[in-house]
Amino acid sequence: MSYVITEPCIGTKDVSCVDVCPVDCIHPRKDEPAFETSDKLYIHPDECIDCGACVPACPVEAIFAQDEVPDKWQDYIDINANYYRI
Image: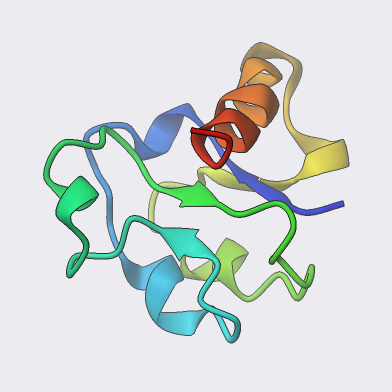
């Protein structure tokens, strides 16, 4: 299981979660070219260590444990995983 960033992040891309992640699994960071064109941030499902540090850091409450993603945002589980398959 990993954490998933959902709809409230769209247009916000606050990097507070990136700053607290101990394994650097949230992308794109501000120093990455994709940051400007991406509509939200993504958590790498294979690199996430399930520490949960990103959850309280998110100012828009967009981050959930995969098994706790609200029904209305379930599609973000695949959206997040697909970001890393490209």
